Image (cartoon, rainbow, N blue to C red; front, side, top):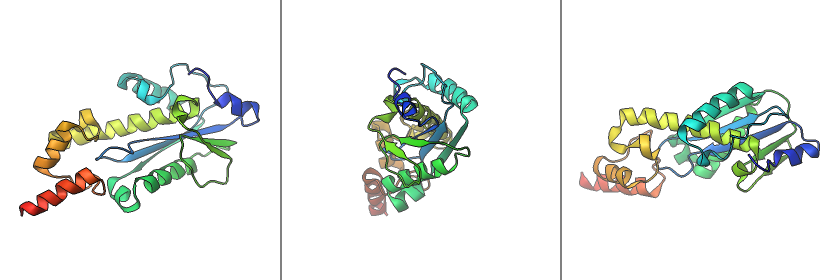
Length: 206
């Protein structure tokens, strides 16, 4: 990653930086996943970047490298039922905070990808943080890889919805499957309008 902003924080005395990011706020199905990562202060890997810029194979290889190199990391999965109960913003905030609580070694500051959290530690919510901070980018990779693996497994159980390809996002094929088969309890987010709409239409049929 070029122009890694983590170094600016380290020059101010924040040597041990926890980066936190999520995957899966927008999809209609599947969990939201957050990851917190604490990398060694001198750790460098030019391949680590915003997970959306990497291929699936690159992310998978880097996820293994990040887990092996991190001083500590934590991955948190928030299921659709809780997303519906809390709303996606509060569910994501909870995921960030739970991930941070899983970091089991001392640190100096927390950098998040634009999410404000409750913490006693200094923290900074960075706009487009996954493209600016190595720590946040590492967290984004762990979150994305974990969530993609979950969606691939769901695809094996529910092939009509094409989760392997769309990862729960509202593609044409996914929306058509919702219209035809209805939403899946425990998989779809019933508080999301496209899902709620198809559920209502299904009820009207009976």
